[in-house]
Length: 218
Image 1 (spheres, rainbow, N blue to C red):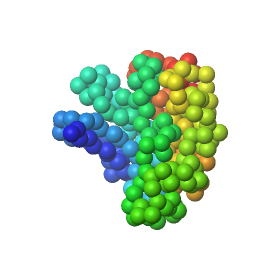
Image 2: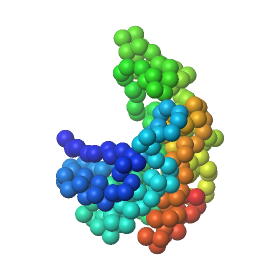
Image 3: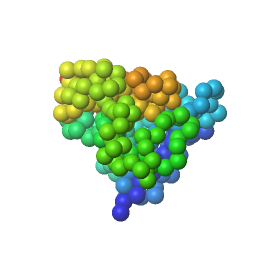
Image 4: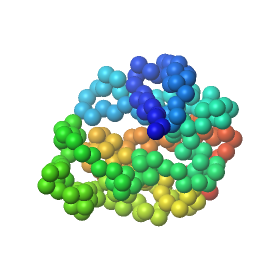
């Protein structure tokens, strides 16, 4: 059994990105480290919330350290994903970026009232197959969001002529993130901007690789 960390970046962490990085990687994870932004599920000024630009700068501070020492810290996301897809031309996407989280995942538990989502059925009455056939189950699929198709290479919903793998790339971000911001699944998330800022401000200058349609990212 492997074990990993999912670290959520809040406003309190913005001033100490390297302290966070070294603290977590010094645990010698058998799995990896995933760095996500904190989400504000309720409207109004978030006490711990951060902007997409602040999240991109947090990642950038870590990437400056990770890139020259990546053999020592191989599984840090989203860095590993960008390297594999852009530089190595391999398909390696998590659920947020592939746009296909509904293909293999389903939430079973108390109703998520913070997102006001309607359930697809009750576990004692509905089978997994019946839940998958629900019209609401398909709301988060890539073909339903931001005009994507499952065969398009996309960066947050914008098609390019790239060749980064056989499927899509990013697909407008996580649909639940879009719902938290816009109260609809059919919009790009604000975190698409974070990926764009990170790639242009940090990934390109540090790696020396221009990320464009030829790399599958636009």
